[in-house]
Length: 223
Image (tube, rainbow, N blue to C red; front, top):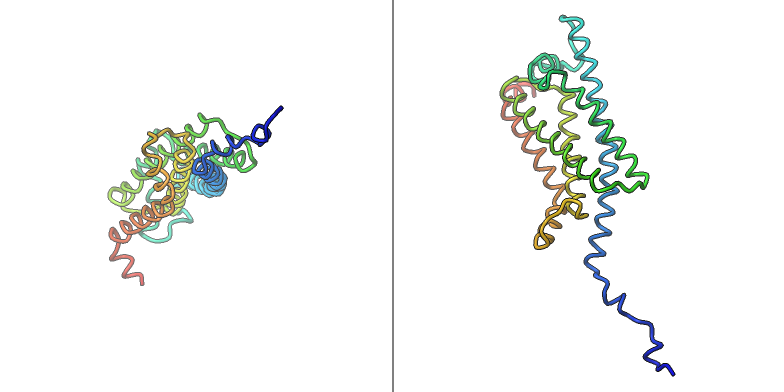
């Protein structure tokens, strides 16, 4: 005959549950959902900017006297940038990369926002692409400030959206474990992911600071 103890429901499942692990898993799922919308919104803005740059490039090539609508002043001037060698690093206009890349970003963002579960390799591939795009942006920022000597407003839109896409995708992959890190780093990784907004803001401040210092006389004279 079974004893009362034998009839008592087992608490092994409750004891085995790791509240911290469950909290991190829940946090990772929320971050994945947020990242999906970052991809959609950032991708749309980036695609519009890449399209506008492509149109302006075609018009400049068709008519050397054409003045792009985004030529706002001596500093903010698309026309001064899109005719430079830096605007065709790989032998074709840089915006073509944006048209392709941001289309992929939007597609993945829509699928993720719709609840589709992406395999790990897709997330890692997206992370690699975001890293390459963000690295390319750093080079373009440097070239615009210290080599070309002008800023392209539409290019700056691309810079602005590429940064959060990289930061959020990387954060989501780190927190979920799709991007592997040593177990001993888990607390540091969790803290770093929590600072993603501050990291992004710091990047914006640095870039804006460099822009201000580079043309401080022009900005101050314009006041």
